[in-house]
View (tube, rainbow, N blue to C red):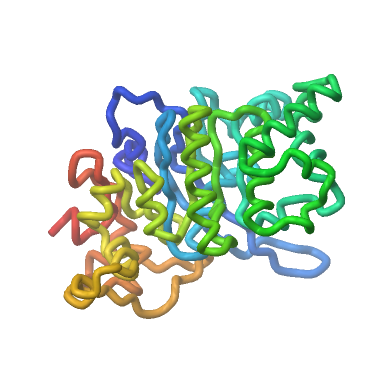
Length: 345
């Protein structure tokens, strides 16, 4: 069960900023069914298990963690691509979880997603022009064919593609170019909020920086707000204003990027950051590494006590293995952590 402190994790930035997205105690559990003819639920995979955070207008909030921790599921559930098991998602003051389908469809114009795999997210049977123009046709934004063609070509040019490519198909482009097509499609409806689900992880290293720089330029130009999901911590530090660290379906630390990177409070965050290579060989030689043992537990059977106790290098008998999963507590101004060792000792 989420604590009031966890629900308040949204308010970790200045009150001078406007909240565009407010997530409270969000849960997404996938049922585990048994039986062939008559199925019954025998358990649940707790992919997202009580997540709370706010995103301020115009900022980039990074969501980081190991594979399988629930980052992508959180992003898709926020956009209502997955129906949440419970919890609240308020976008621009309107509750999305109880919204009628027609109203939700209208709201989707303001919320878009950039997917991880730039090839799987594009229809191979559609030309680039049709892919980018499809959202405009669905929402009846532009009726005139000439104006639609000009708008699509302008979008392609803005993301760094030749406007004459409108009649080509996704297989004719490189991975970086396909991701630019995905970005153009996300921008077509002029959204205010974009979930970027590991948008550079499938790209060559030489292309990643170009795509990130493009996203930053577009954010400034169109006043966009990003939820940036990634596992590349060095890139997250470059692009994000705040960072939320997830482990096994829960947020274990959240705060301003510099605060989290310079003074990580949770042992899991410390382990993640210690794995990031440092260019200076002298610093790399002197710094202390935090090595995690074992694998991430199954979200269908999380550990008793703190979710991280099976891998935590500083866990102590008793409180870490018996007490309920610790809530987020504000340790420093705007810097929250969920760890018994940090909040109790």
